[in-house]
Length: 340
Ligand SMILES: NC(=O)c1ccc[n+]([C@@H]2O[C@H](COP(=O)([O-])OP(=O)(O)OC[C@H]3O[C@@H](n4cnc5c(N)ncnc54)[C@H](O)[C@@H]3O)[C@@H](O)[C@H]2O)c1
Image (cartoon, rainbow, N blue to C red; front, side):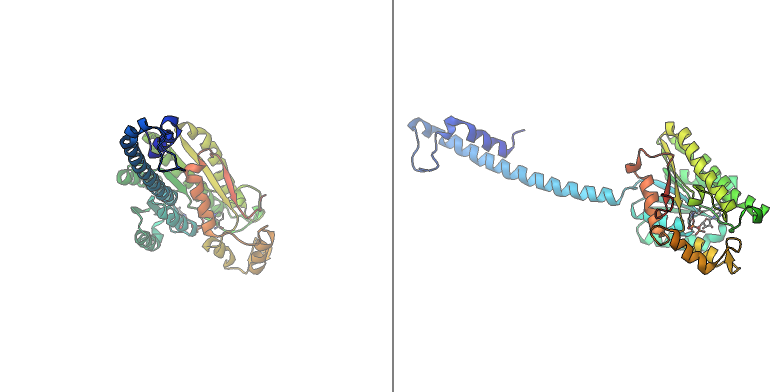
């Protein structure tokens, strides 16, 4: 289509037309026979000018509109997506729920029945932030019926699940191999391994059925990347999470499902406070006092501090975003450089 700018350029490029008007000597027309072109030239100039102004205004409007559109896309990256979060009442679960909700996601928040009051409080907060839709579900991730019911409910309410943040986990207690209690070992594997497996299995079935693909983010830990003398049972469970993540990534890739994991070092929050406020004065099997642990954590961290929940939540959102479309089977350390 001819723009006003183009018409003016064409007019100026035509010697026969240019000849008609001498800009220096505005009063003289070069040839008498050019007089009859005056009305046509005027019409072209007026139309060209009008078209130029119109196309310029249109392009400016388009620029403003697309900048707004771009900004909206940047801040509402998860609009229309359903995100299921386990352990949602905990520190990382709730921080991530808020971050997803700010980006327009629909949320299914799951946690143990004992956390009902905390979940309700979170629900109120999210709705006041303008969350499009939220469901809270009582789910013990180690209970197969709970898991199936929660997945079913999410599908019925929201038509499917796009993202699973498989976050529920327990720390147990710090102990080396010889100090590890058998019952505690089993309990930690039950929640951190079996629970993560069940959720992945039943959510990925739905994702496959929908044909739309999806993303699964599991919660591992730095303890799932390298050995830790004092975290024998917890470390075993988090190594299993890293392993399940890599294997599932390979089997689910053909269904357009990406599977990644986060491997944080200590993050500030109740899980760490729980270790520091253990009933005994010492942690790590008596190897350190709580005060020593706190300064030890800061000393071994290259950045000299524990991480913030918001720093881990941002990493989860990145892994779930379209920008991370080529990342799968990744166990991402969020550790201030500890495992660098
Ligand atoms: N906080 C850290 O420093 C840190 C570091 C590395 C990894 N992680 C991992 O991140 C995840 C979240 O940690 P957090 O700091 O938010 O801990 P948190 O204790 O605040 O939250 C964990 C949540 O999981 C829930 N949960 C426990 N057992 C469950 C079960 N059987 N079914 C359903 N929900 C259950 C708890 O009720 C709790 O709300 C955990 O998997 C943890 O191992 C945490």
